[in-house]
Length: 80
Image (cartoon, rainbow, N blue to C red; front, side, top):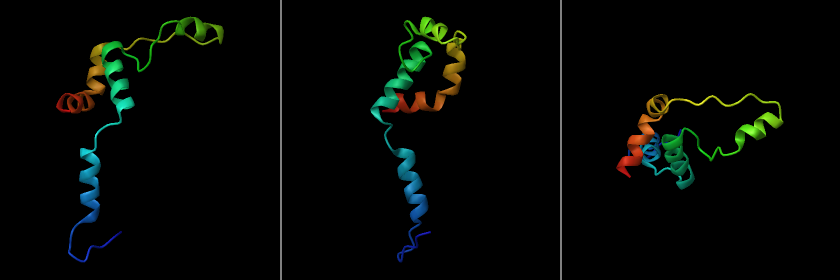
């Protein structure tokens, strides 16, 4: 732990800066896509690709579940 000779709490200062840090643009775009469609990337054709590899179809989460899980991030995006 770093100690500041002026008595400033460096750890809390760094944590506050981290909380206020802007989300990366790619992350924001993924969150917007998830909120709009339920997925972070386009799903067109994904069912046939999954079937080709013997994978089960994807279950689609409801927008209510997604909104609940991402409420804090959604609020941050609105403030930006």
